[in-house]
Length: 209
Image (cartoon, rainbow, N blue to C red; front, side, top):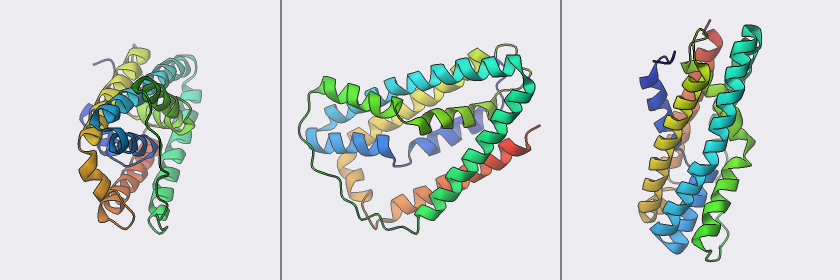
């Protein structure tokens, strides 16, 4: 379908990565903890809206590279592999660091401001763009007839799954807030799992012909 390969692995990897506590999730849980689940859901939707920008940019850019130059596309893939390996290694290294910083107290914000603030947090994060550029090429065949549609489909699928996960974080923030704290075992377990996936995907990308 559209030259997409290993879609099951893509969905699985995406869901695992989406449950990893990061800047987006911390913002959502922070807003939800301060203003309730409604504010958290709005923040989750804002993150999803911001992600759309990265999806469109990745779909357009990657498809143009694939069509214009197979060598350039290969270079992008190897750079993506290196970036994924870097993420994996730094994730493992972060397990040795103490996560003792506490979130700063925040004021109550209008829902509209929460939405746009969340969207900007995602749009202005260059790591999100780099991540899409690194991840998507692994699951689209170099011989795909409609690469733009393939990249767009995968990006939308990833974003939909991620938004659903973020909404769950917002709805159950009171429970998660107790789990995601300094010294708890859940963050370390998630980081170990994600670090392993980053490294595995990086190696897989580098070895893909």
